[in-house]
Image 1 (spheres, helix red, strand yellow):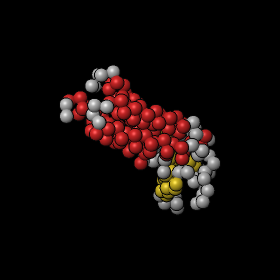
Image 2: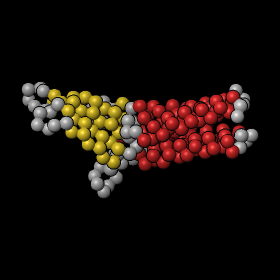
Image 3: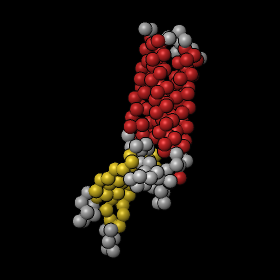
Length: 180
């Protein structure tokens, strides 16, 4: 294996790791703040983290309630129904997992067919496009826009975006023989 093959291999492995962490963690959207719990103005702290698979809430500092940490399926509003406010979450799941499969396939193609760089490039470009589309869909989902406007993108969202952009960058560097 030559030096350029090693660079591509480590690049694809990095992209794959970023994508796996992005898909598996529940920090695509985060919100933190304080909430009043009595008439004297005392407040407790809350945090909400939403990912592709789970939505978790944490409430601290309210006397008598203890520390409450709860996680539920992020696509459900109840035990048996789909959350109508999260219309795109299943599509984002499919796109993100498809992107991971294409990245893994590109790693395989790097070894199985090292002379056929077109397939390697095609897999990376498609994976990058799917990742970017998934973060755009997540960004435009009305269910993630809370009424207090405190939700921000979490590190999982950024990792998915970075993995998609790196995949396209690596494909471009390969296509233009910067990394032959």
